[in-house]
Image (tube, rainbow, N blue to C red; front, side, top):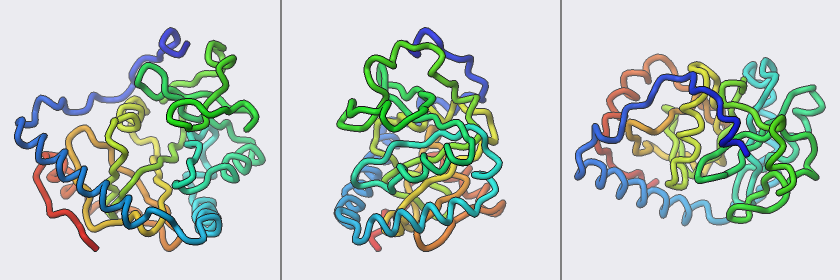
Amino acid sequence: RPSVFRCTNMSHDLDPLSRLTASGADDLSQQKRLVRAEIRQNCGEVINQDERSRRIRDRLFTLSEFWAARTVSVYVSTASEVDTRGLIERGWQDGKQIAVPCCLDNELHLFHLDSISELAPRTLGIFEPRDELIDVPDRWLCAAQIDLFLVPGLAFDRSGGRLGHGKGYYDRLLARAVPGTPKLALAFACQMIAQVPMGPNDVWMDAIVTEEAIYRPGSENQRERAERSKCRLWPVCTD
């Protein structure tokens, strides 16, 4: 299993949660819960989802990060997410290695996928490698081997803030990547909000690709990111 073949963490450690006060952590968690509830209400059923997903893929294909990457980590989309099946197929056509996340022992590991037929519904109904492939050691990759991460989520902002489902799976996975490895989020426009509540263990995106635009934070966002990651509290966006 992947736990036997773990790779050495090549990234810097994230600030420990112990830096937060108990009340600060509780307040941040409450803000995140409010944003999640609002996004689920506002984006409960995306109209023309297939067409919107196609437009997002087309925008992604214009980015140098995609063309330069030889090994790409791609999430396998659920019904409510930007569809990635066509993206995975395009990656193979272009000669890229595709790695898909697999949740084992409450951590995400990366499986080198060669065919969609190697997937089956597993954790929470998410399609992951079939059971008979889990114990094949040479099918697993380290986060440090990935040239590009394509990341899902519930909410995003123009500074690269990302809000996931609350388990921290992707934040821990991305913390194991080589520093500077591009992290691009795929999202519908309705998932963009004014400001995502961010804590010190939350990983920022380098760009968010939607059907309407590509949001790429500039150098002017770096100071803002540093301040927001200190767990200062910000108003929840209601637009």
